[in-house]
Amino acid sequence: MTAMIPAWVDGTLTPVEKLSVHERGLRHKAVSVFVMDGPRLLIQQRAASKYHTPGLWANTCCTHPHWGEDDATCAARRLEEELGITGLTLRARGTLEYRADVGGGLIEHEVVEVFVADAAADLPLTLNPEEVQATRWIPLDRLAAEVAETPAQFTPWLRIYMRDHHAAIFGEATGTA
Image (cartoon, rainbow, N blue to C red):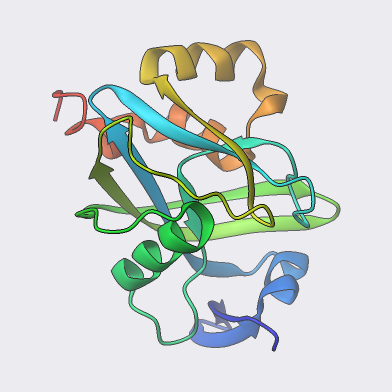
């Protein structure tokens, strides 16, 4: 079955096949989740088999809701599908928008609902090898430094989040909200 995701076509939210959305650079819905252990963020390295940005480091997880799926439900579903994480309390942090070339002629133009959750670093993980090849916990200041030093190792959206939306995403988690 082909994944249909919510995208705006001629100003109307419409179900569109996921690859077509990216090939056409359509503005579409997405969710991003950031799991925190105090000042440390759980990041994932995307599987080498992903159709865009394979092997790059990204936030804890991100995806597109299915047509008609609630954003919070989508975020919880994807945490479980990618990382085996269940039972966290997701806090909505607002909506962000970005547009980025992700290579191979594909564009992400996302309207992203952002969620943050708290967890201990010993949180049990079960990585889905079709989605994730590795994870690590990293202090936000160290992540910012690594993104600045080696940006090509990180997904375009994580670079954008760290550069343009740091306070909106992490303000509460770092005590600066």
